[in-house]
Structure formats: structure tokens, C-alpha cells
Amino acid sequence: MTVSGGGGYPVIVAPGSVNGLAKLLDEFAPAHRYAIIADSRVAELHGDRVRRLVRETGRPAALHTFPPGENQKSRERWIELTDALLADGLGRDSCVVALGGGVTGDLAGFVAATFLRGIPVVQLPTSLVAMIDSAVGGKTGVDVPAGKNLVGAFHPPRLVVADPELALTLPPAERAQGLAEALKHGAIADLAYLEALENRADDLLAGHLEATTVAVDRSVRIKADVVSRDEREGGLRQILNFGHTLGHALEACSQYTIPHGSAVARGMVLAARVGEELGLTAPETSARIASAVRAFGLPAEGALPAPAGDLVRMTRTDKKVRGGAVRYVLLERAGVVLGGDSWSHAVEDAVVEGVLAASSGGGRRV
Image (cartoon, rainbow, N blue to C red; front, side):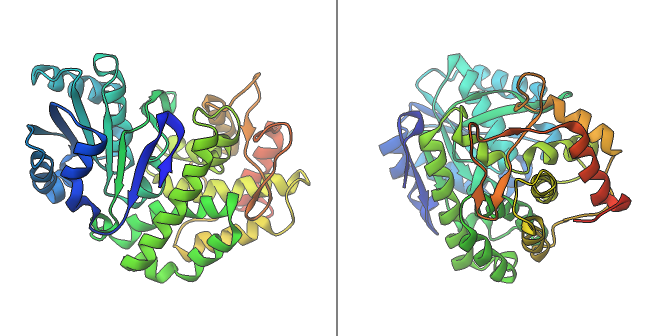
């Protein structure tokens, strides 16, 4: 399939597609030299193989690594990787290959976006969260003390190769983290897809190749359609942030001990409850989403990592704040986003704080 944003780029979703990497690079991202960026864990699993595949183009390819973890998506790590590429003598005719999960895709993409004012990047995701969501769309960036992804750039890739076989080594808990984004796609755009994911939760958590390929393909098609119509998040693309405003606050207030998928899962249930409280979302929508979330062992309720007021204050660092008001993506019902004049909606802090308090056991539960 093709994402038309960023001048258009192909997204290949197929088992074994990484084996044709050299031909794909020649066609869509030819370069004088390639720099493969991966965290050390992914490099151990796939680094040598991918470097060999890239070198089948007949051009040099060096592997640059960094420690794994969300805390590595930082300005400091961006500096180190940029300096390493400069030390290697890479020019503007070079290309970055981002090999790994969401952290690597964001970080390596930001390196490419800023290196010599921008060189091409190819996304080669190895995690489900990257295949399903973050590798497509061109968002790159790093985290800062004030919040996630607050420094970055839109830098669409030349090519995305999503080979589900690369994710087969993931343990079930890590697969669940990525599948939270698939649940989001179903919640905002396709109720039948949400139900299909829930029905095949056991297969997806076990790494069933056919089920995984179907999920990656459907999620990429949903995201590609949205991104193609709104590349820079001026309107429609905001719907992809469903659950993320509160999800990012949960992550930050936990000092990132709550994984991204778990935070987004909880954030989706909370956002649906906010809509119900406002009378904008159909009753039982939050319960429907919570059922799907629990099928993957993800949290729908429970203790909060900080007082509700602190979480609400953290939402004010979100990129979707406009005119001093925090804006939330809300649902009309499961599978349908609430539209109107904007795809996000200003919500009073008191409403959100009340929903948060109730969800942690201080009142009505979601």
C-alpha cells in the first residue's frame, strides 16, 4: 500500500519481506551509504542479518547502536548518534535505516530529519507497536523532561518494510503493548476490527503469524488513510491520538514505569468515560473498550501513579493544548470518532479529574 503524505511512500506488509530489502532499497531509497540505527537488544537479534541484506545493494552499511529503553529517546542520545554519523563521514547522499521498535523509529527518524538538514530514512520495524502504528506517518522526535515527543519533526520515510516474522520473538506481554495501538484503530474507525482483535486475542498474544499479519495490515491501512488525508495533524490526524493525552500523562507521572501500550489502553477507557460524562459518547462505550483491553491483559482500571490533579496538570504539556485548554479525542460510539468543528474537544479539568478519581476506586469505576 502507499501513504500519499510526504510525497508518497510504500508500506510493505508481508511475512518474509525483509529478505527483499536490497531490491527495495535500490528502488525506493538508493544511497551512497547506509547507517543502520538499532538498540543493542534488537541489534543482537537482527543487526548482522540486516546489515548483510543492506550490503547486498553493493554499498557500505554501518550499524550504530544505543541502549534499549524509552529513556534513551533523548536529546543526549540524538547528539551521540548524530556525532557518530558525522564521524563516519556520511553525506547528504546517505540514508538512515531505523531498525527496531517505536523508540528507535522516533529517534533514528529524528536523526535523519536533522542530519545535514535532512537525509532519507527507511523504517524497518521489529515490534508490533512500530509495525502497527509508529513506523507509518513520519512523526519523529525525542522526549524531554516536560513530556513525551515534545521535540521533533515531521519526516516521512522513503519506505516502510513491516515484516511480521521479525516480531515473532516478542513475548506475549510485549506483543500486548503493541496491540494496544491496534485496539485504538478499531475504537476510532472500525468496530468490526475491534471485535475481531478481541476474538483473536489468544492467537495474537501467542504470535500466530497469520493473525498478526492480518492485524498489522488492517491497522496500517487505517493509519495510512488518515495520514494521507492529513499529514501534519492539522485536523483529521488528531483522531490517532485517542487515549494518548491521558496515556502520556500516566506514563510521565509513573516515571515511565507504565509501558506505553498499557498507558494508552487505560487512556482510551478514560477518554471514553469522559465522553460519557459529557453526554457526547454513547453509554457503555467505555465498557466495550474496557472488554477489548482486558482481553489482551492490559489495564482498564486500578490505582493511578499519581493523584488525579497531578495527572490533569501533566496533560497541559500535551501538544494538543490550544488556547490554554486541553483537547481530547472523544468517541461518538465504539468505532466512530466524535466529529464536529474539530476532531478534538476542549474538556474542563474538573470533568477529567472526576473521571480519573472514579477509575482508581475513588468512586464509580470504568
